[in-house]
Image (tube, rainbow, N blue to C red; front, side):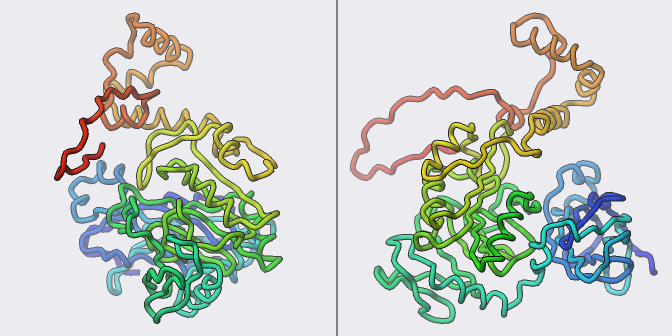
Length: 425
């Protein structure tokens, strides 16, 4: 194997050594290099290149550690969905390789364990190559259930690049056979380059996978509302997102789902409700397009810091979720493993520590939990404490605040010719 004549290096964050994977392996890491093309990554199992879909993302931690290369590598992070189909259960070596022409370098590798027999069969049917034929078949599946977001009437093919409402005649573009059903007055940016942070691409939790398997077995249809930048697709799964990503099936805002009533057997939304301006409308729409007897799963934030695209508006208590989904018989409403309070504490403390100067970080790091709580109590009571000099940036303060206080004044009436101003920031 040839070595690079230029600086190229990186790290494989996951999978970790000894980790168990299934038919669709989640691979994540980062790579930096002079003149390294964005597409210059390859994923291998036991030395053989395998099908994968991957994308790059920002990594502020890497940029801070290697500022000299940050300007030429604005998105050093990568995440990939790698197909392991055809490989038997047991130990295998997965590697990420950077390639420039004929020159290659192993960025990272791990010895992993494949145990697919006990995993969900959903990933056995998922695909990482969303080619023209697959998109065409998905469009044929969608056309009978698509509805105009303006008047809810049916739509029909107008041309190879457009569909049209049969009632109000509003037209919507087809972008590589993907319907773009966005209202002209949408409040959300539909250009992926405008994202403040990349949408999620996490694997589906077991609760979702179980229902997806049932839906597939019954030739049903499932809808992922706010699917993010997932790197796989499935024949009986419709992925809806406000921006077009490689496996997005319909481009639309979540508060106006472009589907006919009772079109889906399963409707789910993961980490989306906090990112829409009117979650009560989102909940109403999800229930509208769900068939009677169908299943709904909603994963929502509660004690989480400010995060994510397009912005962060509402965190939910369990009471709020129950109230929003009043047409649903609640089968369970509880924190899942990834929603345990430890995750919230880790998130908050990680963000606090990463924002501090080394001396302040060292000060907090030396405190026991008991001592830390004692100092917090003194801080909150206005007493002398060791946290008085700990200063957070304005960005971190807004992300982690216990609350906000708004102080405003009502605007005077508009005069002819005046333009209505809006609150921003």
